[in-house]
Image (cartoon, rainbow, N blue to C red):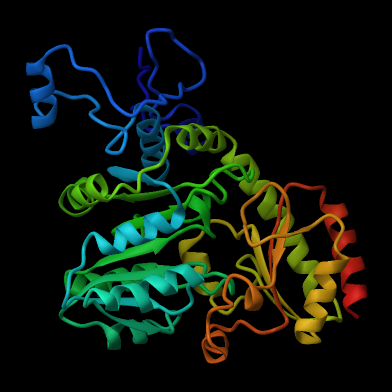
Length: 397
């Protein structure tokens, strides 16, 4: 009883109906198929299933009906041919890179990355003989100069974590194509509502579904999206045999999150824009970085490749770490947490949390100062958030 959802619906409709698979019971909400394996009508049917001659599921490590619905819905939203859902965002990043490289290959990445992404590039890849180069990704010429004939993958976040730096995805994709490499874009901060990397020329998109897609602090998840040929030739076997797959229960939770994604992200972004303007006017704030403001360093690129701002704000307080800690400790509504994209507003001090493992030089290169805070704006009343920040700024003095 699967309703036809192949029409090219608009995003809000796809996020409610896309990929829906119904059992004979005709349930309204998607079913959770909490099963490890599947039963065949005969030995011949099992053989045909394993040969790929008969459609159907084999084992939930490979694919599962609930997880399949989540993957199809994400494909509909992203405009991708195929997807694989993973147990976390980092599982998605690791699989997207590792499935396509071998010893002697080269990976080129922007250095403004989440700490665990830096670990994969700087520490994990060299253990297996894969070379890497980290560059200032905001300058296209750096990508051009660092590309090599043996470069197999380019990796970037845009906007970046935590400094909200933006990279010209279309131009970097052209550079990747010049040597037959694949561009992987981590699109978490922009969300699929405001940026479509595949339409800009990227080959692979990854998400931590833990963030905006769930958006309510309930579960971990990730997803890798690309064309069917790349997934069949690179990711399919890696995924089956290394087992990073998403649990059916988490897939069901993420399906529920997708239903409200546009409402949440637009509301949070609207509030984030107002808070960014408020912070920019305050005497205790040295700098505000927000993709929706005209003073963003890459405002011209944002205008070309993003249709909205972000739910994230980065800002520097005068007074460094002492002021930043005083600010955090004075907050009453906004919670101290290293997560983001939640319905609750969350704040973190990157230099001592998400990016603490970087050297002082590494943090300086990434633009992460001791006074920098990353604010993930939630769904609270905007006036309560402004009052909370205003009181905390006074406390940080």
